[in-house]
Amino acid sequence: MSSSKSKTWVLAEGKDVGELTLNNFKLEEREIPKEDNLKNGEILIKLERTAIEPFIKETMKNTKGFAPVTKPGDPIQGFGIGQVIESKNSKYPKGNVVWGFFPWSTYAIIQEQSVWSDITNYPKEYRSDFLTNLGMPGMAGYIGLMKYGNPKPGETILISSASSTVASVVAQIAKLKGLNVVGLTSSDERIRELKNLGFDALVNYKKYDLNGLSRAIKDATPKGIDIYWDNVGGDVSDSVLPHFNDQGRFIICGAMSMYNDPSTNKGERIYLHALDKQLNLKGFVVLYETAHFSETLKQLVEWKKAGKIKSGRIQEINGFENAPQALLDLFHHKFFGKPVMIV
Image (cartoon, rainbow, N blue to C red):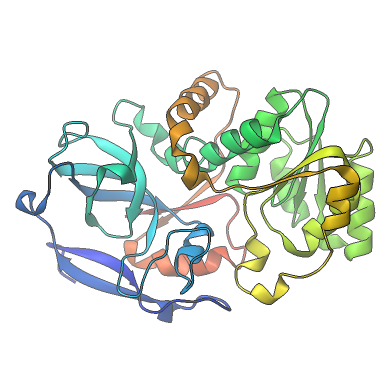
């Protein structure tokens, strides 16, 4: 493909059931837009990097779910960083660097509502952090925990998929707030890596059948669970239900174990657990919390500068053409931390 053209990954066909394949993606070559193509308020960006997220699969479904729908022929969407090449928006002048919800396109026209922040004046070494602990995972962790978790010192929080970037942010904030922090992860290697991110205890759920996992969770949370931050759903989360304390908060941030196979949406009935323990259950999608992004970013940057939250592990993937394979690899647990595509 010509380097003078823009490359765009588009959805070839939607996928409601089963795993994604490379057949769901198509790489197209398009003319690079010019300033004359911009409407008032729009900017043209050159994409610098983009996060590879489980969330992206939800945008590729034929039916509407919690994520914005990408139709066949439309660009794949994700969280990215780009430099402004042309601008008809005084907030984002030419040469500045912006972070937001952008298409998988090496060059793209962006409307103002898709830009979440101008990050030009932040240190350059923070760039990938805007796709991790200062970006969408950080926003989700802070807003979800503080707004819906209502954490109190001395309480216990259990976090599933503890090696994910959002989980590491939740763990570190919870520790700052005086909570006992317990994580669920999938290997002893990950447990060793996670011990410096604020976890007081970690459980390798892969070692147990469901009954054994329930006992392991009970042993790791002897005072019961006040907050459960759920990233996975399925059998793992079913094993958590009996161990809630009264007035427990159940925050559903993701359901990665169920995205590929909706038939797994069955199992333990939550109703009696919710009634008996008076649980507060909250499905949480951070895309609908943009009104809180500015104040959240200010707090996260303050903590980062003070060394109170650490950057999560980032696995950089070079080559724009490798983006679809990286998304497939994500669902096969081939990454530890956040995969970031360097364009």
